[in-house]
View 1 (tube, rainbow, N blue to C red):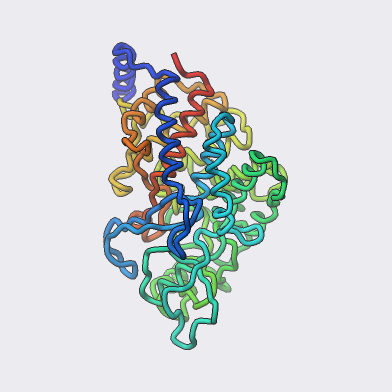
View 2 (cartoon, rainbow, N blue to C red):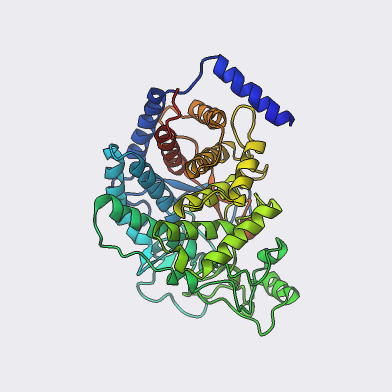
Length: 459
């Protein structure tokens, strides 16, 4: 009650001081942001290092970690940053089609987007020549390409083989959503929507394996939700936690199911996993392409999301998404895509947002996540509130304006907003290996400003 009262006083003070936000103010900030995104989009390719059409992203090691090395910051090219920026800008453009600079950026990004795609699937990293030999027993095959970071020099054979990850449902859903938006914006029907069958092939049912992290955070078995990885996991005749734990403790031995093999796409720890944010992202794609009703995994995904909300597991709902408010953003976005009516889940998300908003409008994640990851948390909080408003929830205008005002004050001189954690390495490196991008955060702010203007929040 104390926090709610303080927020009320803060909003009252904001109003009395005449600090209401105007459309002109929003437009000024948005134009600066768009100029930043135009200028930061890479114009020319540097072989195997930077790629025309992408926006910069970085891998952050917050502290030294076994096999990964010391704490440093590395430039990286990855699909999730690419699709995150692309989709936010595409959604912003669909809110306001007069923004031709967005259309030009999407056009320039499109060829690079396809570099993460094979057939209908997308991978987190692009195919690049390996940094070293990958097997003690045999030389690398001639012309071999593997999945790996672009600038972070992985040292051991083990960690290089572990980085050569399989295709996944997360990047596949967001990559195909980008193609859907591209066709919608440019009127080119060259990409047929990927069928729900591509995701229904990998569901959490009738499995002889289970991920140790899912066990520890108490996700029930047989959820029928979507699995993360598109590939065959290593199965037991009879799974139990002790047996799986022993294999994971000796992951460096070739006999372990968790051991990565040379030249073979790897599912981390050898077992597929279940992530509520990944499931929400898949629902966003299926909802956008009107395929929800046909999908077998839809009910399991919704049940998993509902389970995490009812438990109040805001910080732990996403194995690969440590920021608490990424869950709110992903779920509210999937609800918009699916045109959901007002539900208990939406009410719970809104209640949590309003109860955890600070008096000046900002939001905070956990202490371990980029020192509470305040700016990124607040951007997710803003877009979540706007999504719920779009769905018809009674979101107080003052709360949205409070958060918007806070964020406008934190825009950098170059038009960007500082990048927070949009992804992590998951499991044991969830709070150590983070991916950040000023472009990702800034693109989400452009979307938030367009939504704010679309709903007519100006005084």
